[in-house]
Structure formats: structure tokens, C-alpha cells
Length: 250
Image (tube, rainbow, N blue to C red):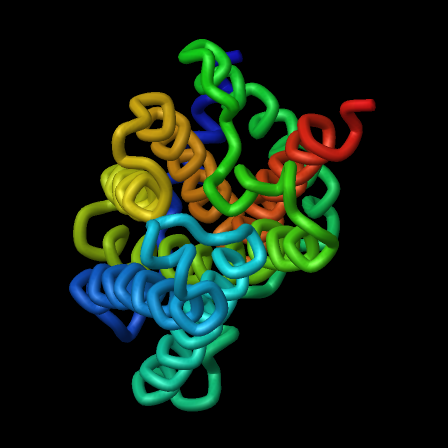
């Protein structure tokens, strides 16, 4: 038992080469993502549902289309600014490669962790769904497609690149791996809460635990690609939960 824990901690503390960007750059790009998301929602909601936007209510289709647009704009900005630092080796610098032998283990283990973390909102008697999935009970096919596209694919891709791909390795080079894992988890928590419901105490704890696990996967595997696979499984679980609540009720 102790040997296994020591081996785990050794993997988590294993050093990586210092990335050619700073922690400040990582935090800046996370803030840019938040600002772009807010701006995209304002523009898309006014363009598609001006009356609903004025009342502060938008459809799942509008919400998720805005989220996808905001994420893609941020991805383009991230890629362009990273190219200036690493040339054409952005994928390698972000450590997007995955290890074939560990893929299924990470996928299955991450699904199990997503199920366990879901007990946090249940303990608070909350529905425990991200805001992008909340309104799907009355959404049409377009709303579901947009929601799944963001929650399972686009959102995890961009947010994992920002947090586990950029922020974590820069913070690890400056503060050490274990502090960087906690710091990245805090950044993940603040981002998720700010984009969802700051008044939900369960969301704070759930987001921190999720961010800590995802960054732990990144540190253990030394691969942002593996952290992305883990994040995708959290999205898959959320979508299946939404299907059970809204589409499979009867």
C-alpha cells in the first residue's frame, strides 16, 4: 500500500521541462476566455433572442452556440500567441500526445471519479448539471446538439488546453507540481463557478475536486491529451445525466 502511494506521489512530482511561457500568460488566457465567453453570449443572445436577452433568459441553443463561438475564438487566440513562443510546435509544447496503453484506464477511471464527484451536488440536494445542460428539458434537437458539442468536445478541449496545458506546467516550473495542481484546481473552480452559478456552494466544491483530479491526471501522465480524455468523460457523464432527467423520463 505504502509502496503504491509512494510511486503515485513520485509520478505526480516528476519534473518537466520549463515551458516557454509564464504563469501570468496562463492566467491571462483564462481571463481572456471568460471575457470572450461573456461577450459572445451578449452578442449572440441579442442577435438571436433580443427580447429574451433583455429579460435575462436565453434558450439552450443560444447559450451553447455562444459558448462554442467564445471557445473557438479563444482557441484561435491561444494558438496564435503560442506560435509566437514555440514556433510551429504548439501541439508538442502543450504535450497533447497520449499513451495508448493508459487510454482505457484513464477513460474508465475518470468516469468513475465523475460519478463519485456527482455525490457533492446530491448532498446539497442540487440537480448537479452545468448551466449549458439545465434548460434541455424544453429544448429541440438543435439545443441538444449544441449542448453536447460544447459540454463533451469544444468546452473540454479549450478549457483543458488553457488550464492543464498552459497554466499547470508554468505554475509547476515556478511553484512545484503539488502547489501547481492545487493552483490550477482553484483556477478551474473559479472559472466554472463564474460561468455558471456563483451562488451554488456545491458547485464550488464539485469544481475544485474535478479540477484537482484533472490536473492530477495531467501531472501523473505528463500529458495534456490524457487530461483532455479525462475531462471528456466528465462531459459524457453530465450528458447522460441530462438525458436521464429530461429525455428518458417516460
